[in-house]
Image 1 (cartoon, helix red, strand yellow):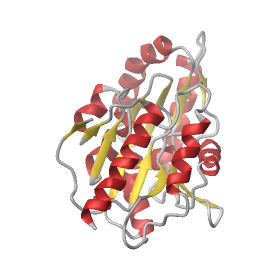
Image 2 (image 1 turned 135 degrees about the horizontal axis):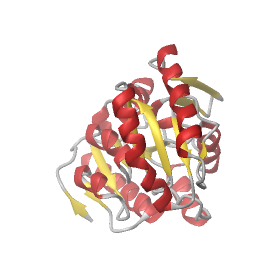
Image 3 (image 1 turned 90 degrees about the vertical axis):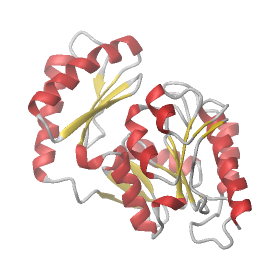
Image 4 (image 1 turned 135 degrees about the vertical axis):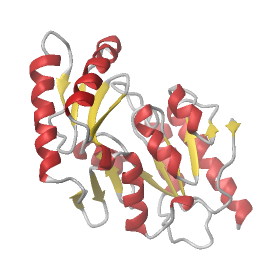
Length: 261
């Protein structure tokens, strides 16, 4: 585990990305390890005293239905963030909401981008639009080289035509996101909702889309499989990859809290 400076305050909330952290895209879930994580965090609240194991949440670029399913699988009681900050789901109240920063103007721009992706980028590829998303225009596909090959073209088009939007990508997806609705704003929204500070939050992420969130929390982690952009800004890079790295990071936070009590 590679470590740099991180917060010396108790960690009340541990937030994980999904793809590349809790699971590998288009691969079977490692249900035994996900259940282990769920059991470790079960019943823990952000206001628990004294602070021991942190409460568990998710901040993912995935759409609402997918994130809700992961929320149920992990038996979460803490609100979770989907579409990288575009929306929030409260599993206890069974309510979801869109980020109030998502304006009608941004919605029109996202619709224009989505139309361009369908007409100019998708044809002849295995990629398809993620039709479940509202606050992002997203392409996804199973062929890594095809997805990554389309990134520069999307970046150029968005950079020239839509300065209020940014492009994030993984090996299997390209997401065009409002600048005001990245994962940093999602984590801030979550902190405000729960009444805790960013210093009391840990986040683990693996791609360039996770960097804004990694930069603002008190303790940040990248699994060993993470892209260089994420590893460069994370306080700690785990030895384990994907869910093994998440479990390693969660246990580190629990041990950290034991030392600060």
